[in-house]
Length: 251
Image (cartoon, rainbow, N blue to C red; front, side):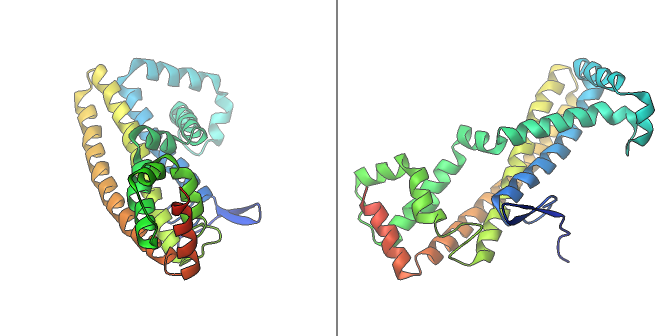
């Protein structure tokens, strides 16, 4: 059964508003991340509301500011208004700052992956001449080289390789980022719970994080397989292979 889609048109391209499972472009991946992070934030804030007095007071304050007459039109109990409001705030902030990108920069996730699983294989398989100096330059010019040797052919909008492979790889990364952002929120929540002595709740969340880390490991291994397939498809064409080699030889 295909995934139900509700989409809008942005710049001539359709973007799903609820890409719960698969994603076909970067915008949809960001939307998917926002929805899942919002859901995890609801769980975190709801849990904190039972054990952390400051959060409980903040939620009560938000509920008091909301007109009681309007509570009747809410699709959920009015007692959850503060929880949903704070969760929306967390989701919007995570979306605005590109939380997954910030975490990737902090832990060097994409940097290490791009260099070791995409750029080095592209350079070697294309026949480029690599010296120690050039290997160092590959790391230094990672973003530019990713654009000219990889994304130029593996774009989610106009791919020159098999589009199904591109969508699979992008969807796989989207799940990795969902797990990463969820793990971050749950870990921070667990630490706050521990501060307030809610050891059982804190332990349960940390166990959830452990499960998410296992999923992240799986998606990481899958990403390496997809990257190898994409690299092979990029270099399958003689013209593309020569162009990729020229980029690395020019370093």
